[in-house]
Image (tube, one colour):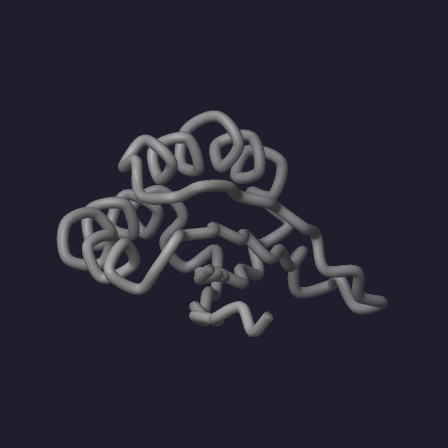
Length: 101
């Protein structure tokens, strides 16, 4: 199993709108690609929320082939939509992890 993790710090001025948009638009659009088998969203608890709130958005895939297909066919458009809506209001980084059983 592959975990595609997106860690995002979102500016407090747009936090509530962003979180609603993520839950009702962006995450459903990512899942609609048919490549992901599950997802989770976690808020990272930090004593310092002055710079915004930080989230871990987790998407689970069966294998790397599905991840590579997501990158090639869908990621660019979905990321551009996010950038267009919240430009200069967030910082994000992505991590790929593989389950070790």
